[in-house]
Structure formats: structure tokens, C-alpha cells
Length: 110
Image 1: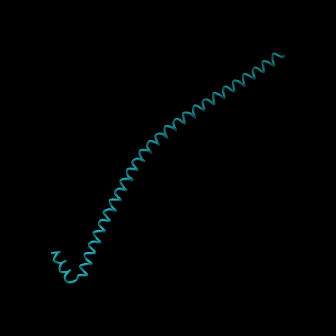
Image 2: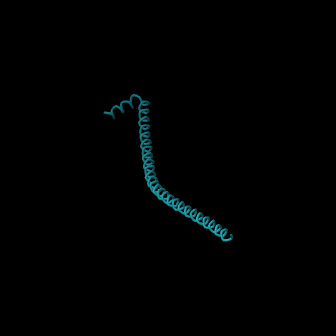
Image 3: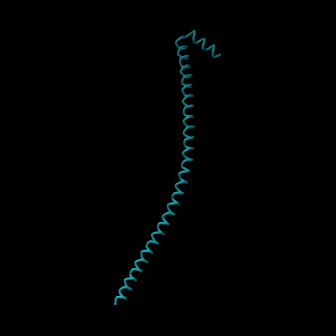
């Protein structure tokens, strides 16, 4: 039925038949461009999803490393604080001992 109508249009108005054919070809090209564009977008989505997965895994590793380094840093700070306290105690003991020595020296001189 459609072919009969096309033939009838072609015989009665060749310009209209040519315009209809050009429109159909244009629509076919448009559909092809749209299909390629959608395929390109789907590929881009796949690439971005893969990159997001990779970055998420890297982020997890870096967060774990960061937590480990923070723990080590806290342990080192505690050790440093303990060492500073020991040094202060040693200095205080030395100062006390030197005062006692000075007092002893002074008492022996009398």
C-alpha cells in the first residue's frame, strides 16, 4: 500500500517525491548519528565508572595508610613526651645533686 502511494506521488508530483525521499534519507542519517552519539556516551560512562572504581580503591588504601600514619605519629608523640619528662627529671636530679654538693662543700669549709 505504501509503495503504491509512493508511486502515485512520484507520478503526480516528482518534486514532492524527491523531497519525501530526501527527508527519509535525512532521518536515516539523523538516526545513525544519534546511534553513534549514544554509543559514544555509553563508552564514556563505562570509562568514567571504571575510573571511579579505581579511584575509590585508591582512596580506601590512602585512608588506611593515613590512619596507620596517624597512629604511628601519636605513638611517637607519646614516646617523645615520656623522653622529655625523663630528661626533666634527670635535669632536676642533677640540679638537686649539685646543690647538695655545694651545700656539703660549704659546710665542710666552715
